[in-house]
Image (cartoon, rainbow, N blue to C red; front, side, top):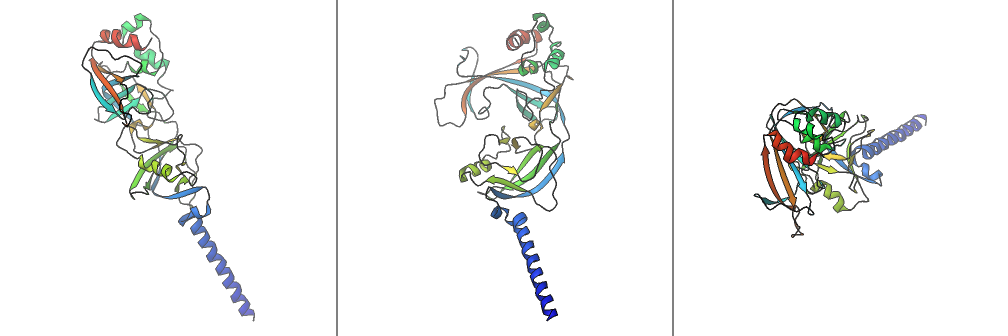
Length: 319
């Protein structure tokens, strides 16, 4: 009888242990969404946490594009090229620095400051940098112009100047998630603080169950790592779109590729050659309402004479 009781107790304990293992397996590894009324869980592949190692690049070619809105009248003189642009959507008329580096890579950076890219670092592109660069243009000094904004500083870049990354956080998380529609893996980069590490719990990508199927799929369909807009803006979405890991902080932009311009950039005045192209782009009346882009007319001029450049560009854009 005693052996029978021990055997029954052993069976009960074994059953409890087995159920516990099954519960934890389902809850944290296999189907955590069964136990969570708020989120859908997507399996994460190739999860990797790395310390950010700031990079720097030397400028070879400079093209600064000034965007004029529909209220501004396009000049009649000169040759204008018309096109439809999708890369201007969402920029709200910000000027753009189109730059080619000595390593043959390129970047298109909206001319504004921010804590995450594509942008310039507010700790570097400031009044002090403006004063340094303004000595390159003696006529500008005589005119008594002063620093106004980021554009007024970057208009004084030289070939040979160095752009370098100034990260606001220390860590980048690289991971992959399958697109539910086509089954293809999509790679993402999330910048922020060091994530909390839990050996016993795998990482998932979360979306809210309350959002519509269309809203959840929009996140995956927007994935275009080769286009100029290289990120998903989570500050505007309704489906949450976050990893299950805990971080003290992470940025709202979830990037599609590991670009130099993902992080805020600073300028080091290491160049000694002046050659800058200025492109004026005017947004035309939107006759085709179904177009995904905006219709524009553009005209470019390359400057190598600093006095001409000061008169035509700097004196108009920094005062």
